[in-house]
Length: 417
Image 1 (tube, rainbow, N blue to C red):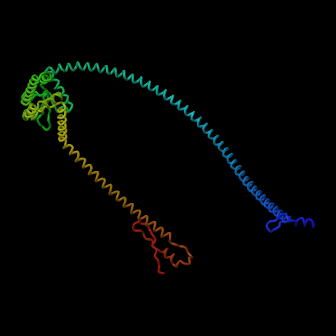
Image 2 (cartoon, rainbow, N blue to C red; image 1 turned 180 degrees about the vertical axis):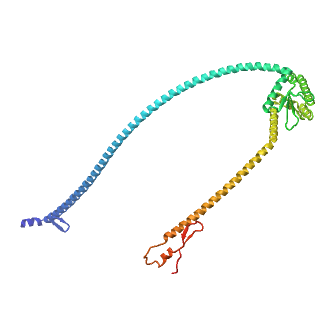
Image 3 (cartoon, rainbow, N blue to C red; image 1 turned 60 degrees about the horizontal axis):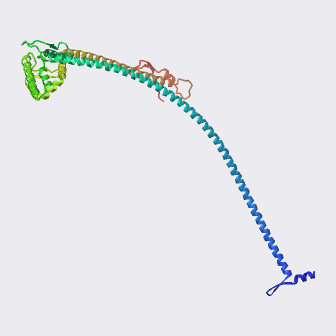
């Protein structure tokens, strides 16, 4: 023990004035060992704590990863389900689309076939109609050739003075006969001086008749149309003017008779083109005809004049029948007056009936009120509140008759309290 103390007290090192013994060194080493051990324990504890925290975090991360993996797996399963549903829908839609396309193709094929059939039928019908029209055109061509022959014949007719006059007269007679009633005109009538106008239109109310002449000098007009040079046309125009003036003078002298015919006569031109040409190039002839009281008329003007004359005749007939119409109107007014009187009488009857019904309603309302009053009366015996003698007074009340209804009613006399 002493040896150990001696050994521990032996100096080991000298640090300045201090002497470090072996015991001191061992104590310092023990302290240093204890400090290092404590530091190691603390480090190990911290390391264990850190590992525990890391393990916990790793466990949390693992749980999160597992949850995420489960979510991913669930989402993948849902995605697979949706993909399967989408695949089924696409399959069904593809089948429907294929079926619809097939149906539409079939319908389109049927329509195309039907359209082709209809077009073929329409083409055949069009060809048949075209053949019919070609046949009509052939017939019309034949008619045109026939009409050309008739025009040639008409030209031959117009070249003859008598036949030309018959042609103009026939047109004039057709216009007059279509516009006026039978008996209002006369063809080829003889006047007092022995002349015979082509038509004599009878005016109403004893007025003088209207003379119409249909003989138009067409030879000079045809000469104007056939002339080639200016001199020939001028000579033909002068001849045409002279012929018209002569014809106008003849109409004025033969057909204008005072008291027998109108102061104006018509000269009928059977062509609108000739009438227009006369008014355009022969104004002096028109003025001379007006001064001679001869009016040159075309078919349209003659038709208009005939329509005016027809209106005048209709107005004259209406005036002739005016007294008959007036008598019928007077009788009609008498009938209307009788109807008015009868309606007023009927209105009085309806008013009296309504008044009687109102009186009856008033009487029934009064009867109803009287009945309600009678029903409201109390005839019971032994009631303490009822005054004595009230029942007797009610029984002894006299019955009087209502002045309006004639029914009997009770007159209740109330006594003094």
